[in-house]
Length: 119
Image (cartoon, rainbow, N blue to C red; front, top):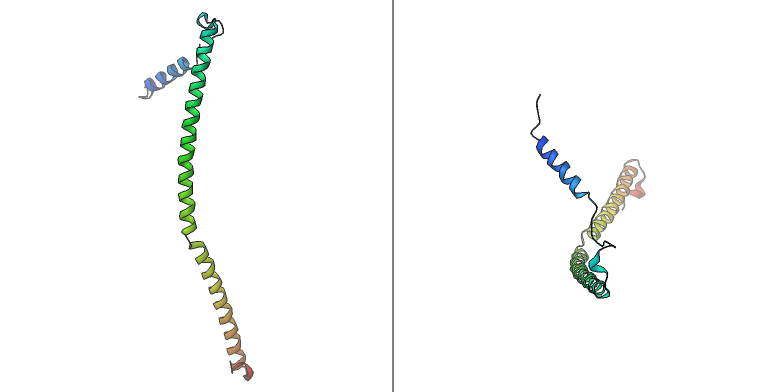
């Protein structure tokens, strides 16, 4: 019987998943260390400090993101490619329209409608 060289890795991964899925023992309501009001107040203060630290981190991170987006928008505002492309497309459309009119006039002139030749 042939055994894949991935088998030990898969077994280790399954074992780690089984260990990681055990219920956590945090915030145990029957924890004797949390029975006093001082212990609960200390725990509440720690949690509050952790939340404030996380809020400060998120605000700083979002401020950095905002700077990046401002720089991106400023770069986009300086980028006139789309406006230039629209202007080119409009000019090309006008040119093609003028060429079509000229071709019609040439064809009419050659057909004997001499009023189209004077343009």
